[in-house]
Length: 296
Image 1 (cartoon, rainbow, N blue to C red):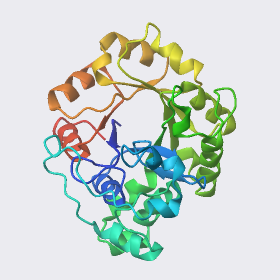
Image 2: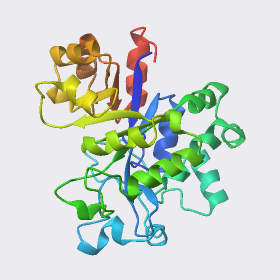
Image 3: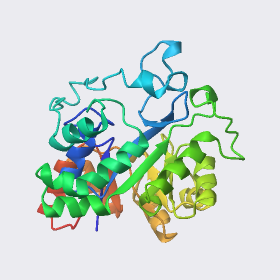
Image 4: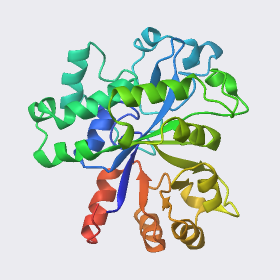
């Protein structure tokens, strides 16, 4: 089956890394969702792409408590030209889930809430929210692709003592949270800092490892995957070609490029033999694949 990964949920139609965005991705039966991990001041893993809420130095997530973040509503479209169809509509399950847990549907979710949200989608709450049996089954099989937002030159953005040789608090809390949710075997850990991927694979061998690569075409991409003890190569799609895909696939690893939103680019990557695609438009990609008889 071809792997359709919803980037930050389905941000072409709902604000990224929010419960409604994840619900929109679940609705179309994605194979996995990709999201971004940061730590709060009180050591809670939250889902947010940037290290700060805005450009102020005191707005780093690491300087704010979870309670502080609960006052923030992540319902804006920062790029309406790129995502003209994005709407901050509160989706049915997000509304029920938020009411049950006393949170804003467009608040910044925690990782624990994401795991629970997917479980509720697959269960009774999902049925009450109008989800079909097929949608709920897909949610039971869904994978969680979690990006640790480590930037070695700016360790202050996470500030948990990570030095590349031993895990920091983020890794420790991630392992704890995945185990508590009984979701270890459905969790992929990824980062541009491949050292934390390797450490997490050693801390919890049930995790799948993925290496992120941006703006470069490595001489030995398969070696990067192997050295990180990973099994998925995740390149910027503009820095991959047929030969790179061939090398990685020949080494027994998957190739999952990001973030690809145009049909002509989907087709080229499919022709080269990638195993999946990360996209802001999982609805469109799923339809594109089905029209061509590709199971996803």
